[in-house]
Length: 119
Image (cartoon, rainbow, N blue to C red; front, side, top):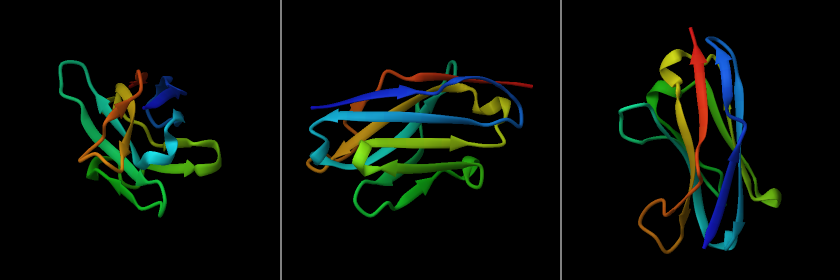
């Protein structure tokens, strides 16, 4: 199994920045990719961005392109999400997830961290 622990959420004004971190432990050698998802109140959890663990290939949803940056530190088994130019619509619980090489999709999840952007 892989355990994921997020940190870095909080309250920020519109236009501000936050940096989320997600530390992985356990069977980290099995990780193919890691990603961030978010769930706004009353809505489904949705993919935001992902990065492959080996090559560092990144993917973003259109709504965050140019504002969010995902990165990883393989030595620390940690993935980061730098969020700039935050807007109220970015308010959500942000979840870190990992994708094992033997799985068809993301299969391990963190507990989530709240990001609130005030207008």
